[in-house]
Length: 255
Image (cartoon, rainbow, N blue to C red):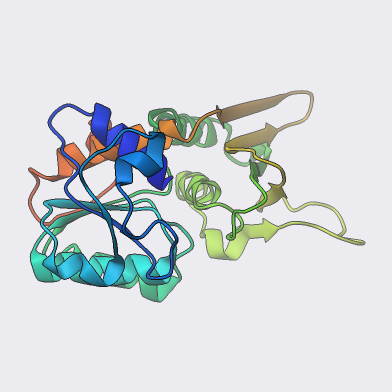
């Protein structure tokens, strides 16, 4: 994703790459970010994350893991710089920290930066409200073998959208996988199934299964550039916003 973000920034009107950061022991430290991305020099050399406070930037885009992402968020608060968070897998404490930071800086925090996925959230809400408790709902997601959190942040967001539309609490009704003698399915639950394998970029399907018919709403990503371009769109948008917590529905203007 780091390489894709560099390329997306290069192609985004009004944005300029001014800094690039990596873990302190990353082999890319000291290299030109553009050279690492696609062989074309950008004149920006990759620095260890510890140098963020001294770097010059207006918006920081982070696609890492929860702990380093929260460190980056703290640096942005100190610098009063905006932040776009593409990292997933935060626990409740991490989410609370993001909400607190958004009291002083503008933050876009979304589980997925694809315009198509953002639109699918709206379609899922519509379908859930229309079908109500007449269907069984399953969320199926697939990602590459290196993804470390499960279910994906996007799948969980889909579950939250569905639960809210149905007047349910996801923490009470979610079922994460099934094994053994489980008994009959409770229609009031929302199931999650996770697939990890190969180089799958990202696939999500929500199945609404009724008696005699079923509806499937799916999104399949074939390139990480989809997410990187969306994140750069968010970066350009959030730079002009007041402090607050935003997501891609705000960026796309479809809230």
